[in-house]
Amino acid sequence: MKEKIQNPILRGFHPDPSIVRVGEDYYLATSTFEWWPGIRLHHSKDLKHWELIEYPLNRTSQLDLRGVGASQGVWAPCLTYDKGTFYLLYTIVKSFYCNMYDTENYLVTAKDIHGPWSEPVSLNNFGFDPSLFHDEDGRKYMVSMVTDHRIPKRYAGRLVLQEYDPLKQEMTGPVREIYQGKQIFLEGPHIFKRKDWYYLFAADTGTGEGHGQSILRSKSVWGPYEMFQADFMERENEKEAYSILTSRHRENILLQKSGHCDLVETPEGEWYAVHLCGRASRDRNPENAGRFPKSRRYMLGRETAIQKMRWTKEDWLVLESGDFEPQDEIEMPLGADQAKEAPERLGRRLVRDDFDSQALNLDYQSLRIPMGERYISLSARPGWIRMYGRSGLSSKFSQTLIARRMTEYHMEAGTYMEFEPDLFKQMAGLVLLYDTDNYLYLHVSRDEDIGKCIALLKAENKKYEYLTDYVPLREGAGVYLKMRLADARVQFYFGYTQEEEMKIGPLINASFLSDEACEEGWFTGTMIGICCQDLTGFGKCADFDWFEVRESETCAGG
Image 1 (spheres, helix red, strand yellow):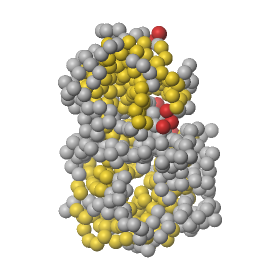
Image 2 (cartoon, one colour):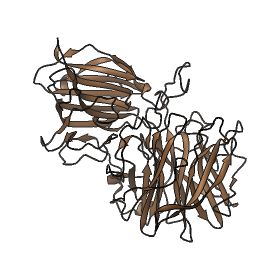
Image 3 (cartoon, one colour):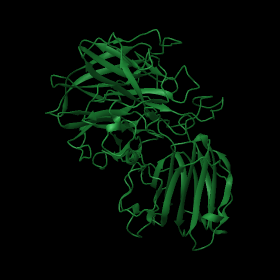
Image 4 (cartoon, rainbow, N blue to C red):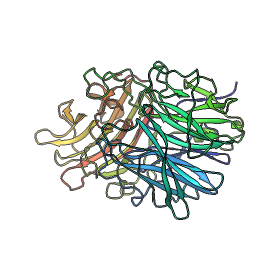
């Protein structure tokens, strides 16, 4: 039997995928929002096994995220390739939960996928989700959606097109609207050409459970574009788009929120679409929730999946099944078994990190800023990572924190830490975090009466509470910190040896660490990390010997 691709292909927080093929190599870019460095790039030979290879935005001269809000920062990259050059467009969102959005669009380029990537070139800022189209005559065009702060808005959705001059490195010529939807909202647009048609491939109907993907076409790049409408498409009202891919009428399938696609053609002429999706937890928001009442909660955030496509006789693109429902597994492309690189290497994930390298593993990201020598050291104590305490967990400017993605609803994480705080303003430990207002933090600190101690802090939409008393710890002794997560329920542990771990705090419903439950941001996903704070400004350090994050079927509380 032919091998299958299991969805999602990128598990955990990997939204807004953009894909390109160069020769036999596939490259896929995803959004990173407020997490540093910017934009994750994965590589594959067969569309099934993927390896994280690069962050193109890895210099502060390229990317300054200090002060940006939750789920702001780097949005919706578009990765393309033309005549020996990689082009990467993206948006930097600096204000979003307001009336007037600030959506700055940029372009970086590179001759090699591994860089170096150029300094950013400013583009127009009409809206987010910019995409670059390379036409056959050598001309290049940028398409993006348009934000509208007016009350009421003139249209539900708009898309604009403008030419880009690669020699002058600037936008040129008129800005023209190519889509105006009175009721149907489109975003995440891509333009591609096949035969005599220009196709406008766009996400529709928001990025929640109503999300979908539409396709339109025109004989001219400037339009007018006709939206594909077919009998297999289901619509319950006029605000729903005609979607070739969506989960909104299939509440019980695995891949919810499906939409925001990009396309790639294989060397054998097969077509595949990558798209974002989400796997729901069993929990829902309460009926009186301020935002998204009764909505299902998605701790893992939006992930990346892939679908096989086909062209109809009328030259419209549809799922190979002929339906709109995303599939949990699909056929691998022809020739995939001839891939030159060992798939087991490409599919391998970091589990345990003993910090034996002089550089952080690529899987780690930090919040808004790079972890330079002011924040961490991998050489001060060989085989350990030393973290220098800086600002608190709510800081949007100077946090000492590294984290990895929660990729399944059953996971375990742990670390061994040596830390001798002098007072209560110094803390270090293990954190399960969605954003700066929502986290569970098992940390070591010091109390005036008890001395060195450990406690579990919960932050839920700026409501803070300790879920334990201050538990005394031995002076001068290191401590193991651990969490077990099962179906959104998490139990924390600590101990002086791994064999004598003790529960600390109650079994916690951690589903509030999810897209729909957080009051400010809702575009990222839950992260698992280690961190250190020193609110005195003295930079007290904590040393971590190892950090482990693994998928598990162990039940929380067991």
